[in-house]
Amino acid sequence: MFADLYWEVNIIYIKQLPSQNYKNDSYISELIAISMIIWGAFIFLVCIFLALDLGVFNKKDHVIRSKEAGIWTSVWFTVAMSFSGVIYWLFSEGIIDNPTGLTPGDAVLKYITGYLIELSLSIDNVFVIAVIFSAFAIPPIYQHRVLFWGIIGAIFFRAFMILFGVALINEFEWIIYAFGAFLLYTAYKMLKTGNSDFNPKESFVFKQIKKIYPITTVIKGHNFFIRKMGLTVATPLFVALIVIEITDVMFALDSIPAILAITADPFIVFSSNILAILGLRSMYFLVSRMLTKFRFIHYSLVVILAFVGFKMIFSHYVHVPEWISLTVIVASLVSGVIASLLIPQKEEVPEDF
Image (cartoon, rainbow, N blue to C red; front, side, top):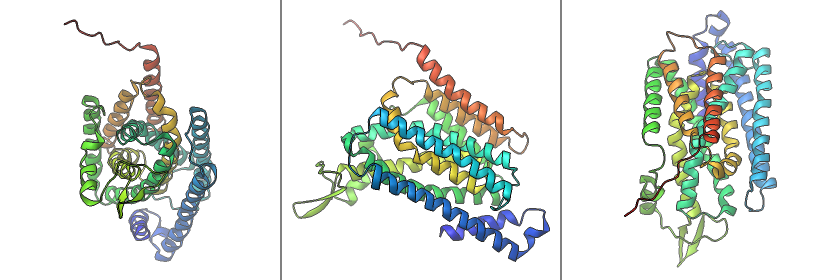
């Protein structure tokens, strides 16, 4: 299914280019075949990372401490930044289809910008994941395993959403305005409500799971299912996994259009998105303990979403250089951190009765 969708996306893109070479069906077939090999190599690399993560480095369940989380966050960030060199090489050598006509330098800038957008918007995911783990009383020792399997599902769903979103933007130019308006609405909603009212046990997803499958409150090791009174029942680990998975899809409705505002090149969008997701687990264990300290980061995300939304709406009238987008994202995040550190939090004074 993904291969067919990917083929259609590239056929649409490539045939729009002015070069006569791209009109030749054999040339198109050869170019797409090479591109699919590159896509396959990238997906294979991601699978190796995941196999090493669960099969070697985290084979034994243990509590992820801040020091270990910090090290792994640095590792994933280094891997993602190093991959920008691969992006430059692919586009400079012309061995991957370049439907949007990017120069190698522009491709790298768009990749880094897309990566930072996904990484920054993932901060909201961290808050929700922490709430979910708390609501279902998931012991810290098993949280990494839940997030690991959550990543597997996230990669699958996001691959579909990215290719589908790229196809929509290319087929219907007006859809970019709809995406922009949606991001502005999301920014407004985030500014007004935040995540403080999120209750996983009152969510639609949790209520549907209870109707479909028997659930127990018992946790036995890292098992997602156990036998109880002759029945196979789902443990809180499985429930938390499903709720996190569906929540991630909902968050992707914001982040995918945001990255598509930077570029519609499917490989750049997919690689930047997936490498950011791979670092989400370690970032969760690092940042979740500091969420109360960085209380103004929430407003940084509002600024980023609003900026990207306006950029999409005016994309056909105003060209915003990539360095400006990158500057806005970094400045917003840094400002949120500095404000959180410098502005003292007001202490609630109990009323006298």
